[in-house]
Picture 1 (cartoon, rainbow, N blue to C red):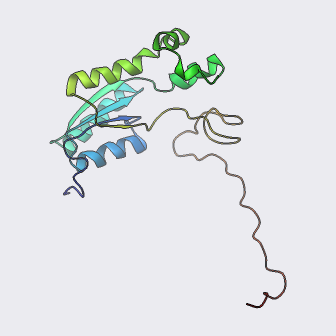
Picture 2: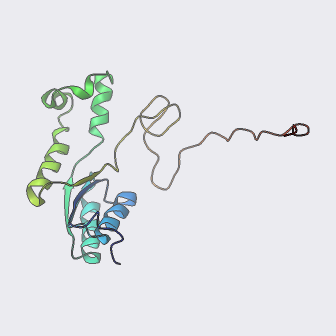
Picture 3: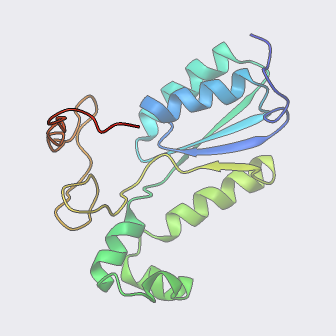
Length: 170
């Protein structure tokens, strides 16, 4: 399949949650469009390795690397800190003290940079995002994202507005 544009050509793309689902599809798409390297970042190393092997076979011109990390730890650490306005701005050492797993994300990205070179595009496909009431995520009324293949409940659509009486002239 010829690349549709030159944007992806020669780029190093890092994708979180790329072991399966949308992340794996994005990895395949950017490789097909000419990316030089794709870093698969995922918590499930075995699935990530299998996905990278399949992608290598399908796209031999692209270099695929796998880095294991759990990107959800940032959201969990913010929860522990009370999600205050300054919690995301704390120095890395203070954030790492909140949860010792935090440095693994930085270490995985650093390892990808050391192995391949600078990351040109970062695709934040995985994690826990705070959402509003009833949304997916860890916001008010939310929870964790639903399992793959299941969608969260959606509120019913508002009732259709009906036209009462004749339309006004003009």
